[in-house]
Length: 117
Image (cartoon, rainbow, N blue to C red; front, side):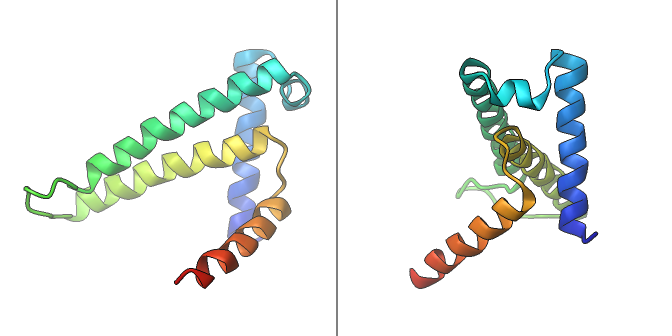
């Protein structure tokens, strides 16, 4: 198992456990209910926005301030970025995307973006 597979599997197990233990739902139940899927897509997207804002707060982005990323700030930047990654992976898992789906779309989208350079 490569590192990306391990990350995906860890997040998938966490997501399954979250829904089972905290929501008394399975991922299949969420996916098969339009109402639940819309609700959880919204929740994940709102969490992504909140976490992305935390990343922004770690990069000292204001133009009128001096940019400085000491070691502890780099660590916080990485930690907040991982939170974004976890919610993004969770969103994709809730919607039933496999690692192969993600990999394939990533490669396709990368080709499109590369052409824009």
